[in-house]
Length: 130
Image (cartoon, rainbow, N blue to C red; front, side):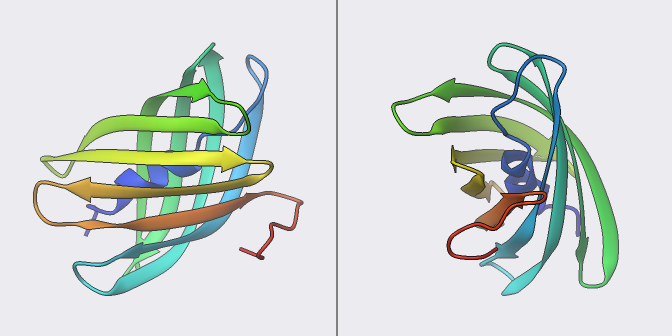
């Protein structure tokens, strides 16, 4: 199912300068179905506080890809993420944060899908490891 992409949205949020592209790799889970899988996000900052991202992963052995736009805010220690998207006809909300080089977040949909995700910037080791 392609309803798990909301949490992938958040993986795309990476502090970067304008036109800088960043990549995160990690894992997502869905509490409704008890499923999880790998996730990769490539994100680009379009303008201050606005990002465009592409998420790729697998769900029950089937590949998926989502393109998402989102907003971010800087806080004292983190980049705070929040957004909404419609995936397979269902509205999703997500929240997350980037600390150092690690991305964490959660998502929920009106169809009951909900879960979390974590990711590390490519080439770095997160603590704990992704």
